[in-house]
Length: 100
Image (tube, rainbow, N blue to C red; front, side):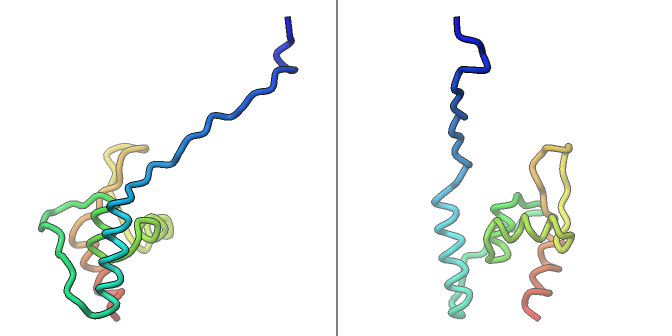
């Protein structure tokens, strides 16, 4: 029998979750916004998830997460590992700061 320390273990390959449709839509919105073209407005609501907040602001989801980590953008969570929720007032505040 082979001892455990001599067995070669392979780390499982875990693909990070990516939503290509949302990434493409966010990219198109950013390009249209830079060109000064009209962009689709997200439906009006009180709280937004990370991807929806990115679409609202016209930036990537990575930018939203980076701004949250730095404290520039505040979010609420239901628990420690729960999804991030962004208030529409907070998104409007950041949107005004980005335009100036």
